[in-house]
Length: 101
Picture 1 (cartoon, one colour):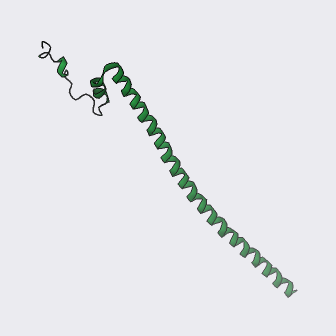
Picture 2: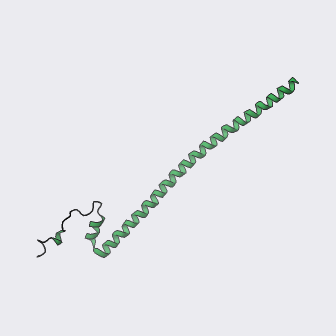
Picture 3: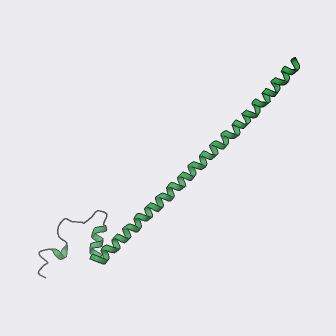
């Protein structure tokens, strides 16, 4: 009876050791896949940022080209300036003093 009990304990210890090894391997695989997912998310975010930024740049260029085509270079410069028009008054050619020239 004692031999059977010893064999059962050794078999049970072997099963526990195999399960512990499997848990370690699975944990390593999980952490590796999480790192890969984080890296892929970072790449996708950068790609989406680049694509959306590229779309915005193309949109701005087309808008500026349309303004230049319709209203001329001066209007395009005034409208596409990041701060907007530089003064709230009339521009030089529209100034009342220069109207008679």
